[in-house]
Image (tube, rainbow, N blue to C red):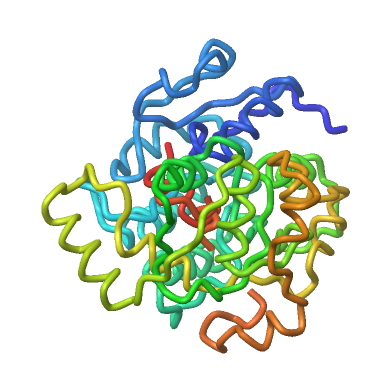
Length: 351
């Protein structure tokens, strides 16, 4: 374990799915943490244990103030939908470029960035393309860095799982698209443990790790598992992409920022997020990812009812544009954008 004395760590995305789990671990380990947040109340009880820097991804001057005296940056903040303060591209790609440039000027010694498996500039999803540009900005900088790219990130009670459980109040649950994109969901706490391992200097020292859980599921199987774990199994109704896209865009136009889901978030459900080595990178960091059924508390019957996809088949289903081994799992994926990771839609905007 490293000596953390006199070292300040800046954490963005501290109120998000992964950020909340990581912040608890950082304060328990005695780290001197500064959180860049819009509203400190989102930190809960942890706000009395950390330094607060007010700001967000759309406020570059706040980066400079937050980075004073900082040795390490953990950049988790992301958005999987357009916000009044900026677009997906601005809040993910451009904001990361500005953050890493500010970190370089501040003399930061280590920049840890949360990306997403399959992030490429040719990906169909705007969020994934923005994450790819953000990765390029990080790798092109002179700051020593580590990139962690998870598949779909989830945790009980996260926005996407909560949305699915609410939809299950109806006789059937709609699923946009075909629901065949394969993902390897990873628990937010496992991602947080991987980040802690990187901060502690564990692992093999590589610059990029792909974080995946032990289950390989289609999105349809993912939804079925969540509903069974919640005690609300329901038939799924596939909504063709064209209809889903027009409907969600119309709802966005009517409800503006209050819409429960956007087309950009729904499109992430059609993006495969598969790691070539499965859980190997997590194991290299000393972390054994949990099975999704165990985390959600679903019965063995629920597990057997899900559709398992072998890794080779999943890889064949991945398009070259998605990396074939490649969220929003994050960026879990949960329809409210917080990632990161990408989680798939797991967050709308993460402080």
